[in-house]
Image (cartoon, rainbow, N blue to C red):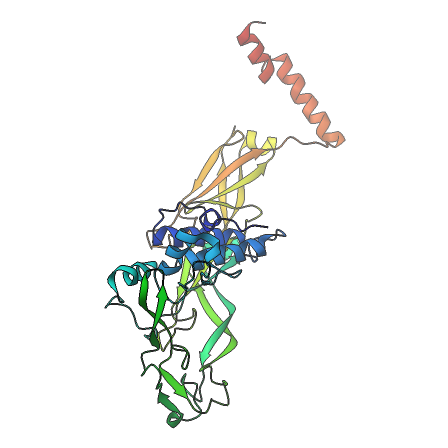
Length: 375
């Protein structure tokens, strides 16, 4: 089966900028994350979304994809070489380098060194919480995989500091230049150093604890303080709990997007809470006092005589706290008058007496309607 176009996967146009690409990725990742979507193909779609984002969020990979499509990448979205034309483009970091080499005879002076420190990527996950946890605030603990710096070698990958030396092949730059022949003549191509693999350093004896990786992958627990009033789609950022940085760069961040499970009785609009309360004929006709549940506890509410279905009552400041500290929402109680489906003998006798009284006095609802319409 042929791969879908990466732009179609994220639902964006080819003119989308970096912020639009990131926004689309988060939207699609939230929709198809296996924790939030239990459909059979959710996991495959989530992987497809991640692959598309990995390519389109990288300036170099995006430029290559725009020119050559999926042919430029292997099955995992990694950039592949182009052997059909007699030379290989895989060693360049950007297509502009290709044309610069063709026509300018060299490399850009502001080209980043391959062993320069780079911040790690951000991580993203979806956390489902209850309606009441979102309304009142809560604390949660999530478990993530985290690449922690090795406490023996402190990230160097060496058993001892003396085991680290500068690479003699690239002299610490992490890259090497080589001449290649092409249909356009001889040109220079820059490649990752094959000796040190871009680090600029050689480790004589690897760390016994991390086996030269410089880090140890482990499960860790992250504490989250979820503020009262948070809503579905809002995110919490945990600094430094994302992917490991490269070449000594800082960690990325962890973004936790909140998904709120629906409540059986309460619903939410902004910071206001709504609840439907069933009421009997007699309570609506005669008026009554009832205890109404709110997210803050029960409140007594007076129902006036003659209340009708869908009558709405406001309980001031009994809603949800504004997450920005701008006060409280309200709770709205909507009356739903219920017609009894089963009546006892005594109840039937009382309703019959009421109907006889209304018919004799022409005070029934239908009689009034009929007289008004002059049937």
